[in-house]
Image (cartoon, rainbow, N blue to C red; front, side, top):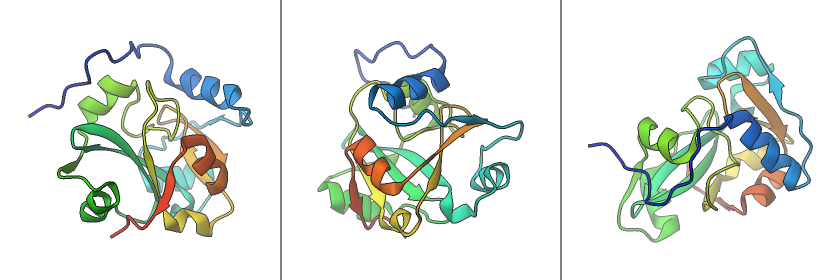
Length: 167
């Protein structure tokens, strides 16, 4: 079964990296987006391209919580625990959004999903382990673009909350 983008979702056919860059600039954060010849599609790919340990790579995961999008931001070495996400959101049904939904709804392809720049405000949960590191490396809208961000700035950017969501 394919997830459908919510009715009234904006057209997201523009350049996804520019969407992230525009968000960062509008919110007063540095535009420190870097492009890599190598892909950052997986955590291991990103770790090599960025030159940082896998734990410092940010995974931006889109879940559907009672059919509404939720961003779960994880340290690269951790996996999200659906039961913990459900509990944190006091939800009935939680599942990972499929790649087609993510792209259609957000304009971002899996492998380049950023923590910011969504078509609407999206609630976010931040893996507590992110706060163990001074900087994490986030995708910037493509599998060849990324930017550094402190977990504290990430929390401010997303309006998210620190939460125990890892397995």
